[in-house]
Each structure stands twice: as C-alpha cells, then as structure tokens.
Amino acid sequence: MVSMQIETIYYLENPEDGVKRWVTESQIKYENIIKDVFGVALVSDLPIMIQYNKKFQESICDANQVAISQISLNMIFRIASKNDLLEYKKEYLSDKISEAEITPPPFDPVIKLNEGIFEWNKMNSSYTQVKTK
Image (cartoon, rainbow, N blue to C red; front, side, top):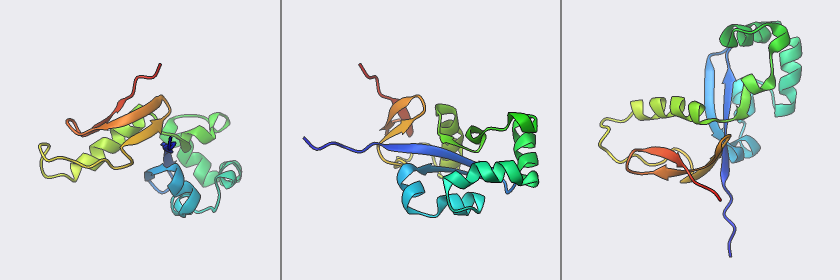
C-alpha cells in the first residue's frame, strides 16, 4: 500500500511588514518562504530576530496586544489552525468572480492543521475535518 504524505499547513506573519502567508511544509523546506516573509534564512533564526530586533518586537506586541515578555514564536510561526484557514479562505475566495463557481483547493486535497486532518469539500469550497477513530 502506498503511503500518502499529508501536507501540514503553516501560518507565518511578519507584523512589521504587514505580511501574512499560509504555506505548506514543502514550501518551507524547499523554497525561500522564511526569507521572503521574515528576511532571515532559517526558522531557527526567528527566536534570535525576536530577541534582538526591537522594531520587530514592538510590531509583534502591537499586533497581539502583549508585553515584550509575553512574545512567543507561535505568534508569528505556527501550524495553521481552523481560524487561520478561515482568514485565508476569505482572501482566497475574494478573488473569485462568483461563489457558485467551483473553486480548486488552494493546497492539496487533504491537509493537516493544528486541529487534525482536513479534506477539501468541493460543494462549499472549504476544508472539512476528517473524523478519525
């Protein structure tokens, strides 16, 4: 039996530059997504950026309404949640002419989010959670 790799979707946000991206694990591994969003080469550079870049710290604090001591990596880089994907869906569908047109999935037909595995539902142009045993 062939094992299907399920792509994990990540949410990246650079509040200093106003950039939000929803990307796959493959994009993080094989493309320059981290550099495009944050200006650093690796995910492991992000904690250093948070610690030493005061302007970046301030933008995270403003965006999340937290104190500097409360900043976490999860605020700017995390496995996407259902709520993150709903925000993406609004942007993704805003480019469509008609709600009635069949919309292809923005990612693979089956994806992994923070809450579990989701499958593309053609009828409502969204991902629905797969019930697992």
